[in-house]
Image (cartoon, rainbow, N blue to C red; front, side, top):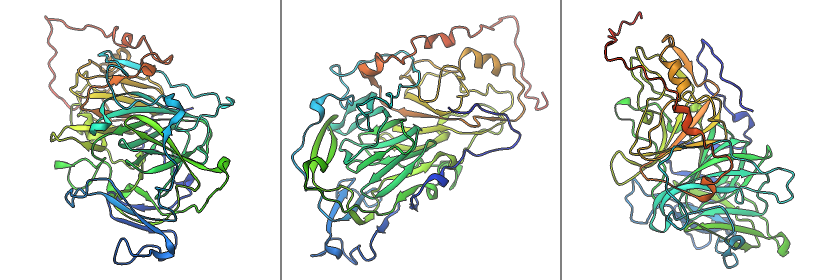
Length: 473
């Protein structure tokens, strides 16, 4: 269980998890990386020689169209034991009986302007004979748009009790941002392995095959999917050249291959593919993770949220949460995101004469929030690790009654906030529609609206309190 926040006079960063990570990585964001598991496996001076070193096959994975300008073009060359095309025909996965939704229309989802909160999503019992891996544990909360049009987003959660065995997952619809909340994820990818713990994130882009193992047992987490574009670092503007998520702290895996084949149908591998929101599966007689070397700038990566360098007001007023943006997926409208990934990390709060919690708000963006650990500063009761909330476009929201009472009477000396806590937000320009699974979920908190009903009315037309902004007050 997550520990409760503690008060301290000394600043502390969130705890790193590197000690539990057995893998090596390359550092940087958006670099052109090169990696080889066998020395000399990368061709020299060209991408597709007549015969590749070690008898490998060259295969390009394109993340953008060929003709996208160089500054935005993304692709990688993989040198593998067998081309990925060596598989059997695709068939519908589980006859379409799964909890993943891709196109968000009136047939599959419903709209609601209500503020919604979910208690921690239930993890299946580990004693259940029907083991649930990452694919089968993936459930769609809601979204907008249609992946066939490359427009929109989806928000999912996963609750898994078993590792994926001899199968991989591939998303043809968009990029996935994974936020583990409970239990580490040991992720095998075509580019190499990544270990991703709570308080870390991973991004696995469109078309990349991966498999998830659970070294800690049952696991739960959140997933943000974008159908158009790719995640990038937000522009810093007048902040300058440094701050927020620094490029050097992102980690991309190094090549590691698995040369395994099976002639026995009971030992074959399967690749589950999400295409236009539906799941399909194809069998093959070899491991999909047989890439011996690769180079390019289209590759998965991980990032520790403990490395985020927070910027905040040092004078007065609560600044907008966009200042805590880790990654953004830009839209065609400047300054407006298809989706932002925002965190609320441990930090100091020093604003004087200020209502310090997040302000009351109606937003032209949709806000989905989750809690990895600790207690969120604006709602310390009811918003729990493993749960979530959704404040849809223009839905009023803000701190609960208890937080308001504390914030309007507290001492405003410099203090720590969010120690041992990590909350996050998926913010999007799209209006989200919810799946029946999310609307009817047993963990939905139908009393959520009550947290604001006891906010006191303190208006008095006969008394105006004058604030002289005296720093000694």
